[in-house]
Length: 194
Image 1: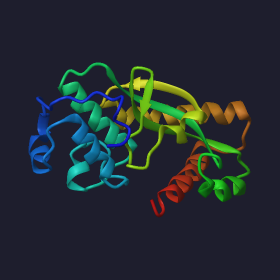
Image 2 (image 1 turned 60 degrees about the vertical axis):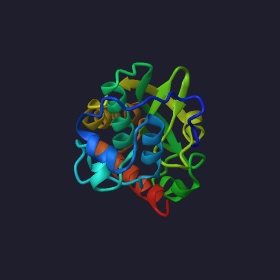
Image 3 (image 1 turned 120 degrees about the vertical axis):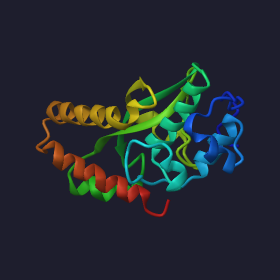
Image 4 (image 1 turned 90 degrees about the vertical axis):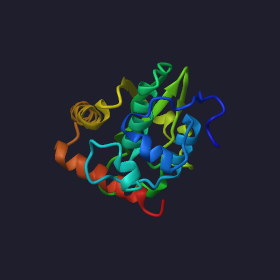
């Protein structure tokens, strides 16, 4: 399993409300759970505040996936793993797919919030099997630790607060709603064809 050489594994003793889902998918260790999460398709869930939708809807975002993994760590008292919200500058070097959107908006980059796990000094992105920390790490400008349940409301709030300050600092002539719509176009473009 990719990305797991330097990441702790442990038997899932405490499973919270997820015992049935984990048993059904033959998951008994944290590495098996990570592998399951990576293989689960990327996509937004019908509601933001329910990690179980990762199983029932068979999809999840970076927030849902890493928030769920963090909740399992919390349930099993694995305190060395941290859930992080990082803000990075999403630009054409991050993904050429968004170049046209940024060019049309006359932007070089747009700040994006991303969830991942940290263990020691290393960051781990388990969003998909293809996810690599190296894709966003060079553009990372801020990161903050959060608890699993904070990911639902707190991550979008941090992101929007950062965007507002960034717009003022850069003296850009966009409202928060306008820049958010540009960001949504970029995210949609990134999600096309994997």
